[in-house]
Length: 144
Ligand code: HEC
Image (cartoon, rainbow, N blue to C red; front, side, top):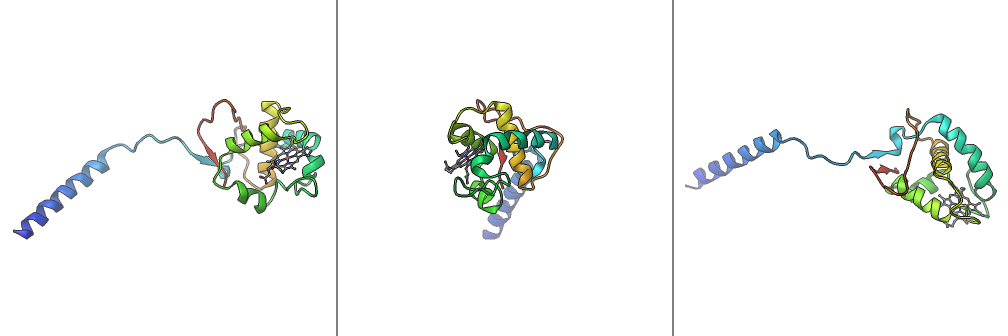
């Protein structure tokens, strides 16, 4: 008696497994990370010029910060943002930086400067430019 129930249960379980395996994987949003090459080298070089003009006075030319502001380079910075998305970093930066004149960055400058910060933190470059749209979070790019 108990043997046949167990066997029937095993059969049902087996059938469920077969069905599950045959179903297509659910469509999940394509999630990338900063290690997937999400900016170009040329973009980061443009970002370096914008960074030097608008950010370096406080965050230092080498991005390590100082008395005026925290660093934007190294594990102290990347660790603090780990798990957040690049969109969140861009949104924060756009809303609060440069601290003496927030909201001044164009969308292009914002993307270029973030590309530069990624390059300075040794995240790999890729084939396509970073193009974060503050009005639309889109597919997340996770900071790690
Ligand atoms: C007038 C000085 C000043 C300028 C210019 C400035 N910042 Fe900042 N920044 C700060 C200070 C102070 C903080 C720390 C307080 C805070 O987080 O709001 C900060 C924090 C930040 C943070 C968060 C750091 C962290 O550890 O999470 C980012 C990112 C940032 N700034 C980016 C920029 C960028 C990009 C620019 C140039 C477009 C810029 N800042 C220009 C003073 C400045």
